[in-house]
Amino acid sequence: MLYFIEQCLNGVQLGMLLFLLAAGLTLIFGIMDLVNLAHGSLYMIGAYFAATFAALTGSFVVGLVLALLATLVVGMALEVIAMRRLYGRDHLDHVLGTFGLILFFNELVRLLWGPAGMTLPLTTQMLTAVEVLPGVYYPLYRVVIIVSTLVVALLLYLLVMRTRLGMLIRAGASNREMVGALGINIKLLFTLVFGLGAALAGFAGMMQAPILTVQIGMGENILILAFVVIIIGGIGSIRGAFVAAIIVGLIDTVGRAFLPDLLRLFLSTNAASSAGPAISSMLIYMAMAAILVVRPEGLFPAAGR
Amino acid sequence: MITRLRPRDALIAVVLAIMAMVPVYSSLTGNYFLMSLFTRISILAIAAVSLNLIMGFGGMVSFGHAAYLGIGGYAVGILAKEGINSGLLQWPLALAASALFALAVGALSLRTRGVYFIMITLAFAQMIYYVAIGLDRYGGDDGMTIYRRSQFGLIDLSNKTAFYYLCLVLLLMVAYLIWRIVNSRFGMVIQGARSNDRRMRAIGYPTYRYKLVCFVIAGTLCGLAGVLLANHTDFINPAMMQWTRSGDLIVMAVLGGMGTVLGPVLGALALLLLEEALSGLTEYWQIIIGPLFLLVVLFARGGIDGLLVGMRHG
Image (cartoon, rainbow over the protein chains, first blue to last red):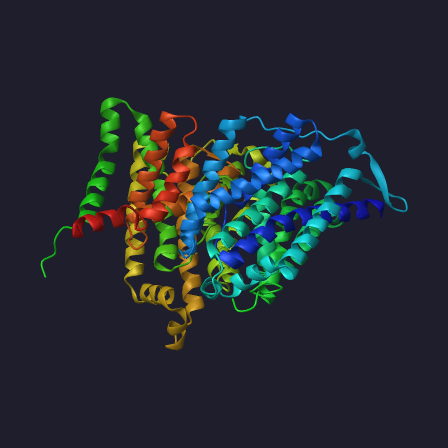
């Protein structure tokens, strides 16, 4: 039972990270109608920045803040230089162009930081387990991830729903031309939204950096998971992304932890241990397929799209 | 009307003539690397041509087409590992497996449109990729060597020249088949559904079924490319169906010109030769080719074909 709760917490933690990525993707898609495959590259760059700045300054928090700003700047520069020219084009053009950008960023990172990858060490205090529920101990850093991503999600909600900028973002999502006609600098708005999405992706990469190795291509597998989240949640819906991210995180983590044991009940030990990993990695895709059969537009389809 | 030889047709004719002469050149100069490269080009051209059937003519942008390369290849590899080497058994089974997977993926993803379709095909291809990694018995992450190529009695696939010509002939046959499909009534329905799906349904065509059949045909043909690829490299690993490979296939199709049957052949040739040239130039060749894709999208949307057509008008 304790193991189950721990795995659920791991699932929630993965889900929250997926939400950070999916929120940026869905925001950018909802407002600029842009399919951005290079979103995973921003996640990777965020992690590399965090590892570099933390090593330079000797402080995790300072490194994090600097890395966040740097990722924001990279994102906005990317929008001004490249992405801006892709708006209003065919989705196939987006796929091709941003696919090219992924190759570019992977190679750039290899050129700048070398092929070896980096680690971002944590203080021992962060690694100790704390009692989150009576009798349930969980590593402090993972608690920090869950709490900080929840705070970011809340801030994002407040930004989009309660501020003037958020109002413009929502207006831009429902009718771009009209927002422009009302005298809003739509170009600047788009740059800001793209930067926001980039910062969210970068933040996810930074938080993940101490747990995984920081390496080239780290953004790609999680990007495809983020796509699954968006498909399940409904493209353009942040609320859908939140719910779907938790679902995907839980199914993936809990499935991987328990499915091999479950299979052992029906199959021989040998067959179960060889089929287990293959089948449990299929779980979320099967969940996606099942949801698509019932709701082809996802759980929370964005209105008018 | 006088039919003039268009620049595109002339270029394709020249390219095919050169491809037919490659083994002669190799045997004269002893440069067998070139023949191996062109075998690879022919095989990936089959995959790109098959992708173009659904993408260029059907408007279905599949970002998971490399999955069929993997399924075809793994079918050959798994059967070889289990001691079944007969090509007459391996090849049909590999094609059937590809068709079956295409049927399942197509049935689900064709319920959706646009970006959903792109992402779902990508997601299912990624699923197959992870399944291949999980197959410990067949090499898992590292892949495995195939010790005997498919056995066909008289034809010996281990003969490099014979294998090269087999790939080239199959490429021409696949292209011919797709040309026939595109110009048939069935192909007209597919192209009609691309421009206006609702109108095609309104005049009574069940476009979902038409598109699904088209999707399965493309998947099966790409499975054939996978069979050839496994036989060419004598090796299978999950990387042969990595999502970047799907991206490469899209690039080939777009680069060559999507509205044409043989355009992707030019695209495959251009991309692989470019990769070869750039990787000889610098270790960090992807830093050049990535932005190049972006530039093609921004400034040369019609691909090589578009440039040639522009040449004719200008």
